[in-house]
Length: 244
Image (cartoon, rainbow, N blue to C red; front, side, top):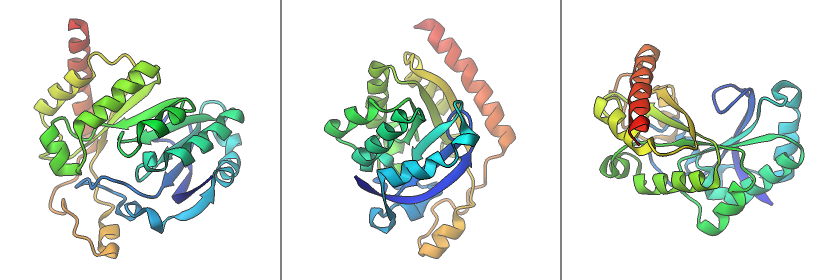
């Protein structure tokens, strides 16, 4: 089984528990206005790897990630290559390597999804927006699809970390926090919610690809604001869960 790979990050600490080898796959069905990897959009521009080659490469770093870390497959959108990821994860689990899927919940059909989830130890789910209109306008995707995917993870009892990029003027409001807390209030599979600061380091990639960066004039989000925003969310979330 072969797939298209964009790149590898050998010792990542931001994409799941512990130290992780992160595999970025090529191809994405969404066009998020804040996307920091526009060079992953086109699936055909990746490097072809077999699942076995990917696992051999990941295994080189096993001494560093040990039992507390593992592999995270990200993108792009890994669900576009669900069968490829399934093979990678199956080989990893046979070798005792913890598997994490970093996804928006878009890109796979039901037939390909269930075999993949059976080999997945944890999911990082990017809930990009909290209204259907914003989701469609700012990403080209669907909030309903993301939440349907989360409901499936709940039924399968797969641990989930939710992620959201905090973009000034888009996802930095108190209303956004209320809506997100409502969406997650009854989801027992959600262990953690992470708010990531909007950054513009990707601007150079857009320039190289000769693509306008939609948020060029939007200021970056500070780490301090993200921390305060996160604290407010956890208070709201705890309150919502108590009322269920």
